[in-house]
Amino acid sequence: MVGGGCNIPPDHGISLGISSRYRLWNFDGWKNKQLDPNISVLTGIRFNRDWHISIISFYLSRPFFFVSIFFIQSTLNPQTLLTMKPTLLAFFVLAICTQVSGQMNKFNIGLEYSPNFTSVSQPYGSPLADSDGAFRFANNLFLKGGYKVMNNLYATGAIGLLGTREFLVLDFGGQMEIDKVESHRFHSYVVAPIGFTYYLGSFYISPEVGIGWNVSNRNKSYWYYTDGSELESEYIDKDNIDNINETTYPLFLSIGNEIRMKSYSILLGVKGYYSLNSLGQRASNAGHYYGFGVVTGVRF
Image 1 (cartoon, rainbow, N blue to C red):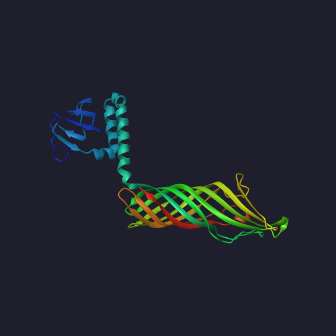
Image 2: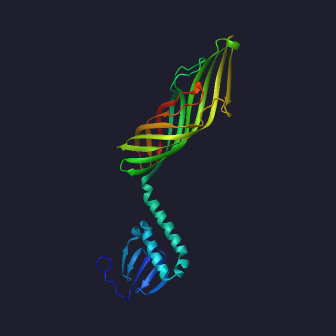
Image 3: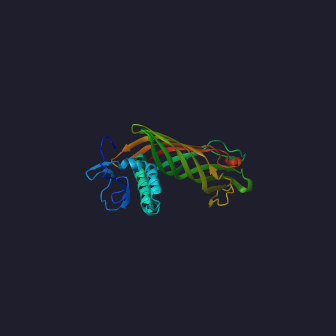
């Protein structure tokens, strides 16, 4: 008695397979073992030629079940191990592809853009340096993916570009005929944050923590002289003479609404960030950058 009450006559065989074109092995009366490539449609366990139970979802999701059966078969006939290599490889590829395709509805990916205003968290420590504490315009852009952990919760990971700015005023008080210098400093990072997104209907909250690497520092300065003349200069700090930290550890928090369409969603919300470590290693850049702004994007 096999398969919930199906009697198998001793002169009939049982065949098991992994695809629609090839039978992995068969047993005729549990005695005669041979390969049979002539079956054109095979989806599971076949009892006789008239009955067949489709359990393809079972054996594709449980590859070790068939590995054990294959091991038993190979011990009975060692040549099977050599002749069945292509079929066994095809089976594993099919099993992996089925597992991934079965999980695809749990993944999402999207692009997020956030124009924001950024500043530095504390006054500068140099007696010549000062900052008005005002915010300057900056941008960040991230490619972000998510995996559905439970109904309303997604684990997320992203990679993208984060831009920050600082504003510094150097007051020379007429020394060297210079009144003051206003310096606008732009810092760019490649950042990889991880976190989660929790949904309340179409609204979501997404906290993240990341690690980033400084890839560019640009300085644009305006020189004001005591005779009333002005000079503008700009340079890229390739040698990092300002001692900007090469690594940054930002926190992110996004809150917004996901407008769901047929095959994609539009994101609208707000986003803020704060660096856990200082901007640089000098007294003039010992503050922590932070910023906030709107966030928009598309998610598939």
